Length: 199
Image (cartoon, rainbow, N blue to C red; front, top):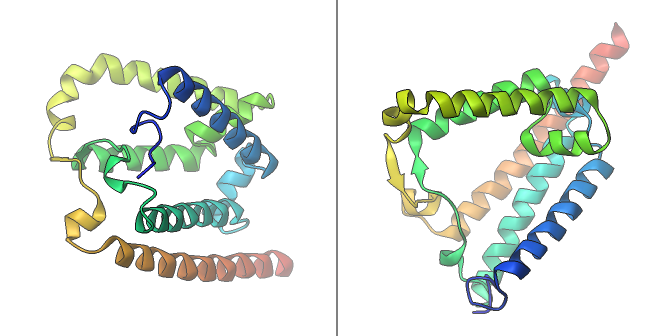
């Protein structure tokens, strides 16, 4: 095993920060080049008028999963050392719903709002200020919500562990979901385009 590189001591904390910075810059650059700094484009996916975001992100997720699976299979990557946080199921569900609603209303997620800010988009700046205000409110209200947020603790668990199934089978299901999803959104885009042309 030679990866994750940081976990095996192949570079130190300082180098890891530089690597993270470079990856972050590259990620932001490609998001902007793909048009993901536009709230209109991001919100369009919820109306089936332009599903580019869904297609790109689902493709990225599937590609990453395939890469991780095969790097592990050939012995280059130790999956058990990949970091992810503890699961607090109730707080995670509520947080996902809040983020999803905010995404639909504002047209951004935290990452794409940063991309929008880098190109001077006013709506992205307002969205981010709203997010910062939400962080402040959450911090102040945390003592009142602490019991709920810490309930439903499931520890470090992922879908293969939870369902006691093979990682490869999960990957196969995700690939099928991607194919079905791409087919569905193409149908939705064509339907919406037809409706617009008729009106």
